[in-house]
Amino acid sequence: MPSQADKASTFRALHERPGAFVIPNPWDAGTAKLLAAIGFEALATTSLGLANMLGRADSKVSRAEVIANCRAIAEATDLPVNVDLENCFAHEPAAAAEAIRLAAEAGAVGGSIEDSTGDPKNPIYDFDLAVARVRAAVEAARALPVPFMLTARAENLLHGRNDKGDTIRRLQAYEAAGADVLYAPGLRNVAEVREFVGAVKRPFNVVTGWLDPDITVAQLAEAGAKRISVGGALSRLALAAFVDAGRAMKEQGSFAWMREMMAFADVRKMLGAA
Image 1 (cartoon, rainbow, N blue to C red):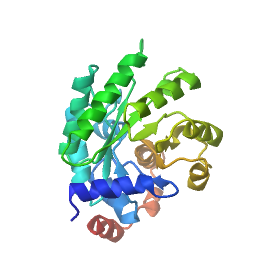
Image 2 (tube, helix red, strand yellow):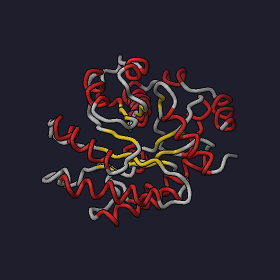
Image 3 (cartoon, rainbow, N blue to C red):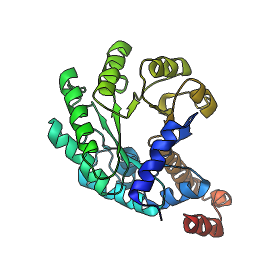
């Protein structure tokens, strides 16, 4: 079994090789094992997927829950794991940076800090505070005994602040503060991906949630994306299938959905392969 240092080295190498790679988002140990068995090279947690699993209509999760979920996923396979830490569950820079240390202790070799406050009335941290938070997270990551890739997220586009100039300015400042990977969720097409990638020099993460589903990995790679994640999309897909089956039973008395089930032997094989 690879050590955490081995996983960290593997994870960094994925960001340094040519082209793009997909880093899918499991929400528990089982889905992590299935994705590993398919052949993915790294995994990323999803706070939305975790909230769905916990039945949270408001999608809220605590730091302790995120760290416990990170540990379960990191221990489930030999793959490197990047953890979704939201805004690191604190406003003050040093307090936010503590989440980086906890994620590493739970087995992650990468993690993110975002500039969203969690307050709908004031959803984005002021520029200087946002940069200070990233700088503190970078310092915490560099102080760890095992290398840790810090992703800095600019959240403007998810909160009605459709100011590309300010979003790029923030990404460039986070890059200057030492972030290893940059991320602006909410990009909607390949042209926007190319524009944002061209504005920074560090690897860029693209999440597919706001993109046309027909856009391919090859197109995103050609535009310069390095890492492609899906956030809570796999969780929502699983829930859609679950709800459709439930409605078929309740409303139609039908079990036809059972024809689409994964074979029990295949489930056991894939879970064991990880």
